[in-house]
Image 1 (tube, rainbow, N blue to C red):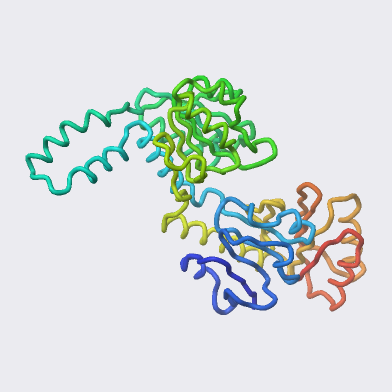
Image 2: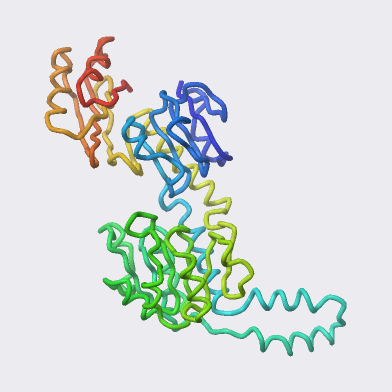
Amino acid sequence: MYKILTHNKISVQGLEKFSREKYEVASEIGNPDAILLRSYKLTPETIAASVISIGRAGAGVNNIPVENCTERGVVVFNAPGANANAVKELVIASLLLAGRDIIGGIKYVKEKGPGLTEAELHTLVEDGKKQYGGSELCGKTLGVVGLGAIGSLVAETGLMLGMKVLGLDPALSVEAAWRLSCDIERVEHMQTLLSKSDYVTLHLPVLEATRNLINRELIRSFKPGAVLLNFSREKLVDTPAIVEALDSGKLRSYITDFPMPELLGRDNAIQLPHLGASTAEAEDNCAIMIADQLVDFLENGNIKNSVNFPNTHLERSGVCRLAIINKNVPKMLGQILSVLADHDQNVADMINKSRGEIAYNLIDIEREPAAGLIGELEAIDGVVSARII
């Protein structure tokens, strides 16, 4: 029986993936094999020694001590792309809010309309609508920084709206590139994208290279009167620099779902309460994806969408499977196979993958292992953990 510790409210559709015959799932449980969470903040001290995997029902893992987990042999999963459509739709809605003063128009009718007759309301509307004009998105240029699961959807939708779309992503994978329309113009330099774009939307993780990416120096490259959208990560922008750009008119508007005190009360800043992935569908999709990945890892040792371990998949063969985590140093595999040979174990199939300083092995053997095998494998200098599946 596997034990799953949950934090936060997890979609029922995801929890249903854990069969009652094989899993015990609860918000309070001793010696869990896995942790399933959303935004709950984990620390090394709150991760029990029994935990071998953590599933984040979302894309970001900044609430999980990933480096510590890697050292301990804990596989951390996320759900990239599961909430991509939800975020895309909010970004597109925000583009429309930026192009035309829809919020101002709503407030105008709501505040001035009550108590008026139909004729008076008609006059009010005709007089007031002149204040809330705007411009169409069609024909404007959209710059998309980061062409992953969300950015690529935003870029494609921009094309459908009749926009010219520029894309920049130095880390673009071949697989992601194949998904992109040939009508998206790729640019190589941030300054080029900013200088040509009427709207710029950010879809990047926070790394040392991207922290405060939008700063005073880079803001100088923006096209005058451009709109910046940040539905990715708060730390991608230097907020004081944004305030200065809004004050000077260099930026016409800033729209984000990471509210900051310095931007409250400004007509040229729209701040939402981190709504990007807050749809029923996104929560279901994230929970289902993470649950499927945890089940496959716990029951088969396979790894998909881990942020700290290599993707690893091996079809089952043989009688029993060993999952072994070790430091990525020379001669480790030879020592592991030597122990198996000493136990007269024949290898039916195996796979060895590495990522950075960690390596992972799935080894199918042809008979049940002796009681002391796992202990001997874990006694090898450099082996982090070993388990029988």
